[in-house]
Image (cartoon, rainbow, N blue to C red; front, side):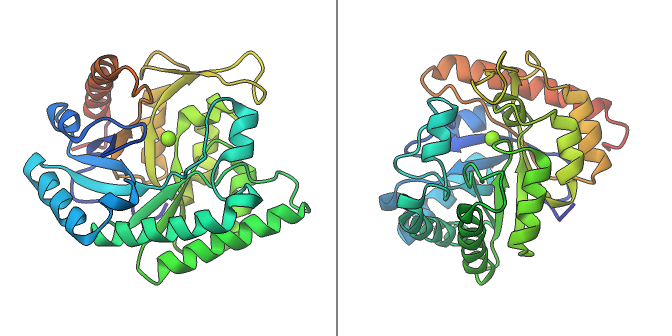
Amino acid sequence: MSDSAGSSEEKWPLGVFVSIDEGFGVDLNVAHELGVTTVHLHAPRPASRTPAAAAAFQSRLQDLGLRVTVVFAGFDGESYADIPTVQATIGLVPPATRADRLDELKRIIDFTKLLAVDATGLHVGFVPHDTSDPEYAAVVAVTREACEYAGERDIHIHLETGQEPAEVLVQFLEEVNCENLHVNFDPANMILYGCGEPIPALRAVGRYVRSIHCKDATWSDKPGETWGAEMPLGQGTVDFAEYLRTLDEIGYTGPLTIEREIPQEPDRQKEEIGGAVRLLDRLKQASPTTP
Ligand code: MG
């Protein structure tokens, strides 16, 4: 495994996914109230990415005792409505929006640098599983260009898992072949997209893992065709005790970042993330290697 994004002395500090002006995450104040110390940030709109806005945001983070460990890119026109829509709209894969989104990703990498954070994450999209597909080579090339731009600024790129099986992702990472390209492992996505059991997948991509999400889900009755269901942590199929044991096994010591994507129900979202914080705290204390 690579050095974790935002790694510090404390092993497995808890974190939560947050948004400033849009996106799936909770508000910064909620993160603070939940008692976590790290956050993954959904990149804000361009107006909130100026140097002045970044400085104001950094001072707010400091007041709340929070540290951003990864900035996540999202793009206009993306929709997670169902699996075919994800295939058609997400990330750098759709050809019609690829060039514009690469530009936008570069601006988000610039914003990551302004915040003094060293990692930008994204869903690259549904990488074609057939490597002879000409679009496969095009997605490899655009990902490499993003990595090179980020590398010149000492920023790492973290690809979110789940939209392809682990072995397809590993082959893709090897083809892009950039030292600053890593994985943000999300066990629930493996289940939601029907792309394989999360624990073996974590072992398979382990050497690339530099950040992770703690999210839970149940399988669809038609895996890969229809969504599984996202669940509160501990109520889905992911075995979080085994997840933490496997993170230990691959040498991951960075933040455990909780993601619960129900922004339309903020009270329930906060309550369920609170439950996730308590569950992960218990499991951390039970881990033989946690001081
Ligand atoms: Mg995730």
